[in-house]
Image (cartoon, rainbow, N blue to C red):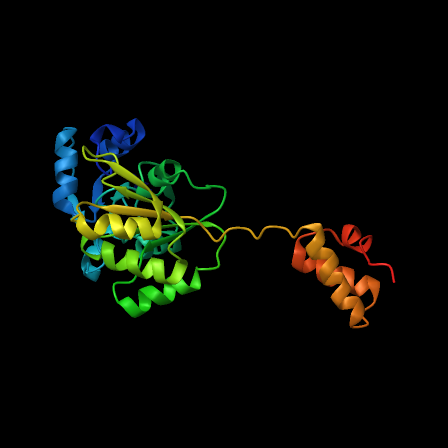
Length: 272
């Protein structure tokens, strides 16, 4: 019984491939590739000769079964056109089928535009939401952006050059033009660029520039609300007291709204 290896490959700079990835590619019996031409060039660069079979979103079931049949007798390496397999690339169904038939699946970590862009962005990395490629249709793209408008985590998504301007315009409309962002272009390649600013600034930047290359956009999440100052807390308590709300209930309500601890709100209850 073979192993299905998910092998990360360079997203631009060939020096980013790992020694472990090279070993697995040399030792496997078959390489399943999203794009056999680009993978063929990669293997040739490292003097690796292996049979290739295409595996993409339009692959026929016969090719799918060929990969599973190959796992019966040897290891198979699944690679995307660039980066880690399954990140906005085909492969999910193959992994599920391999697991269902009892084949081990092992990830060989490697380059990814996602993990390359986040540290470069200068935005918080503690929590992030990966959105892949946004929908091509404008209405669906705006719907997705509306859904994540209130998310506090940093947002990360990919975009093609011919849709960049439209996506930035929709992001300004649905997320707000003052949101901080980083537009990462051609990561790890010769013309790598990271533009940092606001969404409205990015839209203005690429209004006159022709977008070229592959883009990864990192956008700040909605900021945490600032806690109320003491004057605002006292004012809110006075309003609730005038409405006849009990001291304990008023403190609970104001604490929820203000970001203060209930005990700290309680001591500010106005004297009659």
